[in-house]
Length: 376
Image 1 (spheres, rainbow, N blue to C red):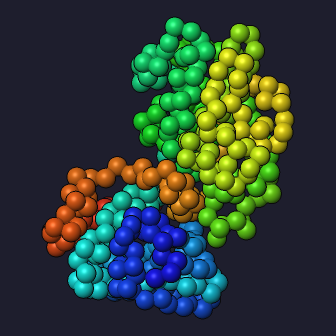
Image 2 (cartoon, rainbow, N blue to C red):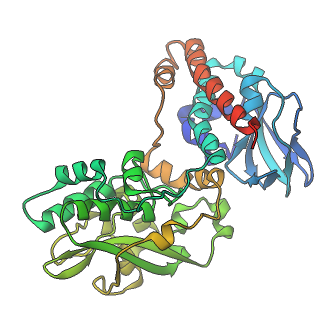
Image 3 (cartoon, rainbow, N blue to C red):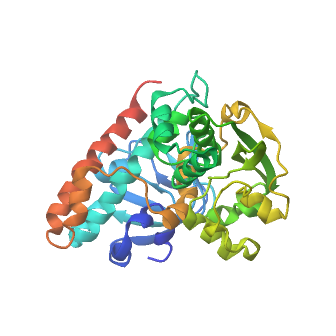
């Protein structure tokens, strides 16, 4: 099914995309049509290929999927979902999975891995009461000690390399540095906050830089279906460290695969992924992009003004926006043992692979359903 690969589900399909696509059908929904009706009995799963839908407290766009609770559990729908625009979906019935157990197992593994983000959406983390840049947290102090070297510049470079290796993903930014360390990924705001916390814990003088720029800079990381919703300008945050009495930009926001992707889109920054932070060598991709002096920076002591604000995007939309970066860097999900075992058994024992994957998916679908139905 053309377009299925450009979805959250599609990230997990690999060589099974064509086989799974053949088990479902394309459907067209006019504006006002109900894709799901509350309390309706249906075991159809829908993946949006084109258009937008709405429900009580949000909506979905291209790349998102819906109906997984009824699909997996065989229980009535929990919400009305209505087409806002003409909508095209890839739709599959649960019973169709019996025609190809291996392809079905791959789909159920995908749902098992994607369900937790939807559950988190219903109880998003509250902004922490403590300082966002918690350099005195035991985990931050222990990690900083492990990254420390005899010279300040070597310590700064080691921390920069460490934080750069964390996958870049769109998400909420009201997180403490210790939360980002535990999570293992972040965006420019949360990664720079972690980097500054580590540098301060290591005894370095560090701060933050706020850069206003053209949204064109970030467009290569956003699925094309979402380009029209981008604002014309954006704000980017990065860390800075003082070395030999001079502030050095030390942007660790993007992994090397992401930097290489930028280079393919913007030739003026070619070779950026091979550069390293060092004494007299700031690392400031945004300055390189715009032709500015990388040493021309204003350093802030805190990012609390930015980190305490709420995103205009909900978690479902943010996950769809991560399609490009997840393809570039690999998926960051914590896969349960049953899912890992199912993935190993796809060819040797597809029926057992399906059952193992289903055991995780139904448990997570049940958790999501309970979260939706629990009293406010």
